Length: 153
Image (cartoon, rainbow, N blue to C red; front, side):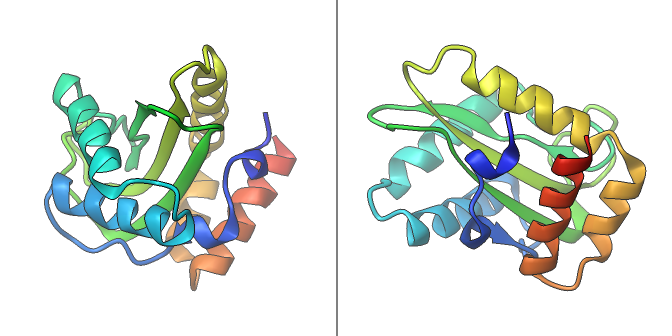
């Protein structure tokens, strides 16, 4: 599964604000809703926050994969955000989280999100890639770095 099959250039930001978990997810949901008018802001935020209550989606090395199933969603949709300074997102390793890859999953998409999560996890294990994302000048550079990493793995 290639990242460009579910991530669009417009759904990438290099300027996630520092804030609480809810504020960060809210800013990412706002990005998605601004590019996909069919999405319902309140529903998306509720889905993502409910998933975070079960267990944090922040893994380690500054990476989080917030995700959840969205009723009526026709296909997997995602967005990516970077917060250079990092924030507390209850990560497994206790380190600040800098990279947020949100996955919105159709209710009936069994296995699709697992493939996407596995692919993303593989990409973000690369320390050089994380450094490249951290140093990228803007959202376009971030998006290009993601696609380049995806093509090389």
